[in-house]
Length: 185
Ligand SMILES: NC(=O)c1ccc[n+]([C@@H]2O[C@H](COP(=O)([O-])OP(=O)(O)OC[C@H]3O[C@@H](n4cnc5c(N)ncnc54)[C@H](OP(=O)(O)O)[C@@H]3O)[C@@H](O)[C@H]2O)c1
Image 1: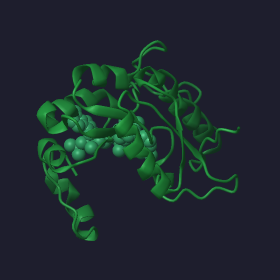
Image 2: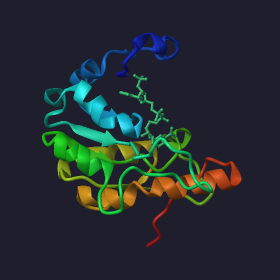
Image 3: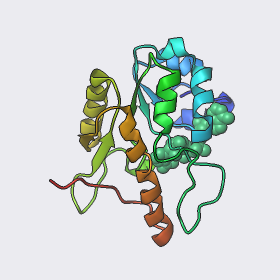
């Protein structure tokens, strides 16, 4: 796991056999599949610290959301992007050799692996410009217990990132954080 301060992960490391912590650059250099899960406002800085050459040609699961540093209004988060752009597109433009795939941004971390809902298998909406990277992420989603809905190229992140707003509205309303979306066909 990459971090600015490895010492803060000592507790986590002691419970995870085989896990290692390092700088963002060390983690990105080590990984074959990268997961970007940092504060949205810091996501570009984290990738800069990871260094473009460590990301080149690799699938990068982008779980981030463009949440601004202001409080929600009636449970509605404030985004620093607008509806005709997305954080993932910004990152993809800057890190053009990385294969970003939006995924895992609109569900709580406790449900990311082995989701268990009365309503059945939940849907993970994904998008990205590289087909092979999306196939890799779909395989991970299959193994984790999700059904994947590929929404197309990076621009679709304009619709997928705000699902996080919708997901949080329900959370704030009920103070319940265990729910997910499903695409009915
Ligand atoms: N928590 C969830 O259930 C959940 C679910 C879906 C999506 N997400 C998304 O996942 C991302 C991470 O969320 P989180 O809940 O883990 O908490 P967070 O506070 O948004 O992110 C913590 C992470 O951000 C990094 N970070 C913070 N400021 C930084 C900076 N200035 N430069 C570089 N890195 C910085 C931290 O690195 P250090 O270790 O160096 O401090 C840490 O890895 C967010 O974009 C969030 O929207 C979260």
